[in-house]
Length: 358
Image (cartoon, rainbow, N blue to C red; front, side, top):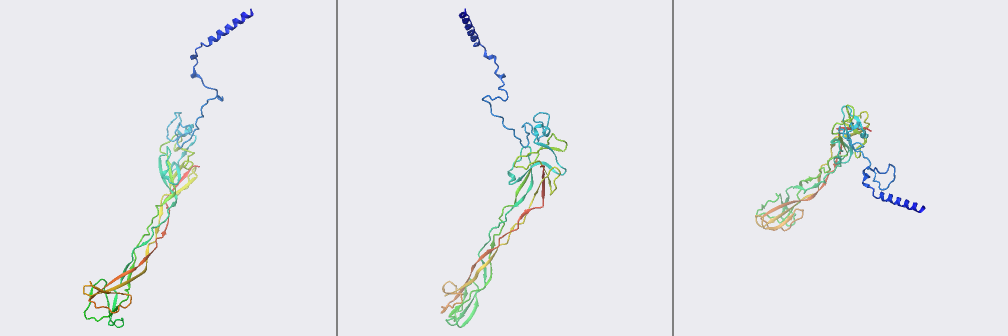
């Protein structure tokens, strides 16, 4: 009996197992599975969601744009009234001031792009003028010299002892001589310098145009905002680099900041540039005149016989001559001076005051 009961129990277990193997697994809805409960450490979990970021115009949730006056996330609240705009606050622009906007103060403001929601660029000047004064070097041309007409003295002896005649000779002119002039020697002194000058050049400003070392730019809101009382604007409290922190207002002239905008910046709107250069001049150096008289066998000055330098030396035993011509030349050089930088570029009197909320 005991063996028969065991046999029946074994058969019953086998029947149950066989029935389980025929179950329809399609009846289990996998879409209804919600995963492990919160806090479980089941394997295969996904990466955590990216951190929320805040931009200049968007709220912390990313759905509400806080500077356009629209209910972007459809929650019934606009801009500063929306919980997603916790980085923004309502700003009342004081009377006679412009704003609000974002202030940039640094180098190369033309390379700075205004952020979304702040499309209007306002150039508010700068400070710390950079304008080195430099000049082109001075230079001199060839000296321009005028010489007196040279004199020549004729002697009746061959040693320049017994002077017979001293005459002034116009340079470059052929002078016929009388056949019966009994001259046997000649001498002449160098002609005097009548005038001398040197053309000067250079001494022109070559420095770059003046610019501000710190250039200031305000990016102003481009549309009406919402979520604030009348006369107020929704503006960011926390501002990303490279802009100054806080919303700003601005006004022409050098002003005290209105209440609530305690960070004061004053910028120059123009530059007074009186840079220049001292005048270039040239000093004559070693300028002198020389002359040479040439005698000719005929009266047309085309058959030279002897040349006499006007250096006060004697031309002895001069041959007979029918004509003569004197040539004058000048030598020397010019030394430049001047061309030094003068003046400077400074901030002008036209000012702009920008005040930002701390």
